[in-house]
Image (tube, rainbow, N blue to C red; front, side):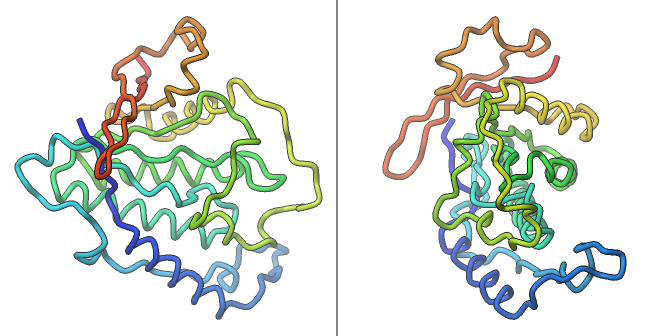
Length: 251
């Protein structure tokens, strides 16, 4: 099966322009009467408009069920900034809804970003809630969450165009605090366990593991309660990518 992005760089650019314009008109976050930043003033929402014809390469056709759709990797559903987390949730919901309309059966979504400055797994509940919602938005779609094999803070680097750097500093905690540098061998598995429990062990929810990380691990080192269901690898061409990843489902 071949992979395809659900949205185009045109959509990405449109979202970044909307976000930049919105942030330029916002006042700096301030603490409310309850001594919290979670006030309506600080969490003024930004509505992402529906997809336009230039925002997606997908259209309903006879061969659409041979494709594995990939949602945008530049979102940050775990952002401690509620504005960024809400925009990311809207984008994922729009993508899943359109993929379902086109007839896509398999979608790969990026795993949760577990580190934000000195904060660790603070927004995992937001991520799990978003996954729970899209399982209802796409009632016939299998969701595969793309997770790293281990929780390594050193590989949480921002890329050009990511939404994570747009998070306001006031929501990122103590920026001068030392960031945890220890690799947690079971960190991503713990995150997956939280997600699937919140989603009530949904039968259409799977976890995918990067083959590059798996290549140095023996199969017996994986949790014994997981069975291998799919194997995907990446091969790049000028237009599409052939998927071959490791995907597990809790048995």
